[in-house]
Length: 212
Image (cartoon, rainbow, N blue to C red; front, side):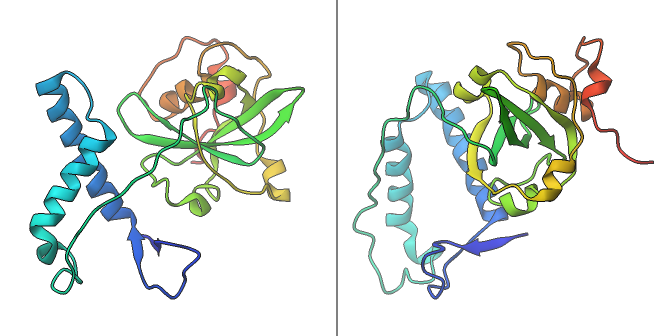
């Protein structure tokens, strides 16, 4: 399990966030979402979700935190901003998508050729989005191929960070220069992991086969 500083700008704070706690809280929120969908036929609002967390901590602060014996929770505040209708992207962006079985998988935008993004997918099934530095060390399972810009703009692949490309990144294998409106990179990742059987005649040209 990996741990990182809660605030990279405060290295002396000794406050940490970990992959396993992230996954546990994420699973908890998933269960809360299902309850709202069952009872109210919708997801909870952010205010409802934060309000639930605040109510739990207000009642159980000493039980769950090391400073709960000497502190009282007064308020949890949050701020939001309107998301642009179309996601912007840049070379080096690390991308996240959810496969048809719910597992996360990660990709990267390696270049933009004549306004067309070129994306390859890492062997990153079930990795944590907190571990960008580790994700980009993994080999590719889907070769670097063009992806339709709208696939990125509409957040079918979500930008979760950016990492400057290194010379070694130029050595990753290249795939077909075909492009269509489908999310080929995601479908090919699902094909690689045995979750889908796409009907592309050249599907094996997209995949980086495992050794052995």
